[in-house]
Image 1 (cartoon, rainbow, N blue to C red):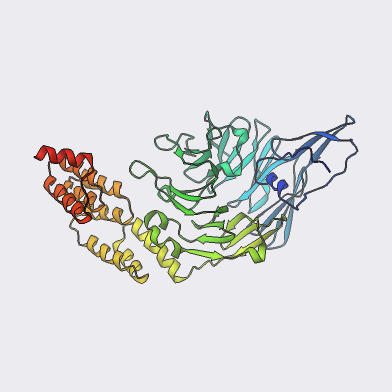
Image 2: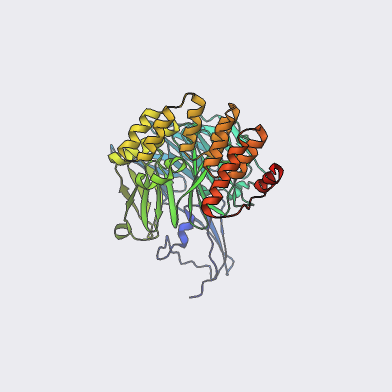
Length: 484
């Protein structure tokens, strides 16, 4: 048999059509040879042109959404059947127009038809709130705790769950018709959208106003970005972006700008799928055919040395096979889609063992500058050097010095230096750079404030003498010539 073409949609549901050994449906038509195939923008209808002049129009049914004990099944183009698996009740939702998109999360079930958007609270499926749609081609729905987003042919519209339009997002490099699940992510305070022209760039928006976040500069990555996802819990200072690039490397990034740039660390390699938990800031990923769960991934931004102590690994190949995809992560259950299209649940502990709790506590206490708590937590996991350093920090006389040293503990040298300079602690800023072997910066500050120049030159001289090397830094050579 000769395959003349493959036609698929670039979204999380329709890409499944290309998975091996898994046929959604097979239809033998009486149209002669099929000469052309076209999907509708929402991915629910397909049209085929036959060699004898006939046209076939098909509709995708039996799509299923599961969330926290609820199951919603699209039985035909205008009917959704809801099963409450807790009390075994069934709700049959009928619509006047065909259903194009649906989403179930954060206690709300959203259904989009060709003319309207229905928003159901799980407490009452009898009286939905309804939005009259200006456009009839909604291609994507995204949800968070406070808002939900509808992407249609012209813009991305942000609504609250009282169905009030909050704002709309428009950008020259964002083509709404190309937005799908992996290219848009949202939380209560940030919306991230992948640039469709330059796939290394992510644009950030404020969902309450529609304006670009902060200084308006987008996030730029070194490689093409495949998927982005924001965590959901906490405030704006806790917001983290996880991204997967075309090298299958998983990165974690702070949305808040610290100093001149956002901090980013690599969490894992050879990642095929990842997902944030909906109810906590726990991150799960499939990497090297293992399910890895980070109970406190934030620790990578503050103390990456103990990141491995916060993670849990599950060997799931024997039970579930290969080519797995993470679909949903709610509380202590992760929904996984297998290669044959079936879904299974993998349970995890909702009470991580004592070590995981203490590792997470060290990161939380360090971020919150709770010195006593951080000291106890580091002592429990036998990080003696950090215990001694925290005791040294506690002995410092001023709050500014303590804050700078806590930033150093988290590896944030630029921010620590900025605090010292703002509070006129110039000598400590110079010594900070010397201890970090940032020789040029130390000499720049010494010359700028006319302070401790001899100390910088002396320490540099002793350093080169111990290594039996000659001076190669231009700034120090120039300084030596001026002194002579």
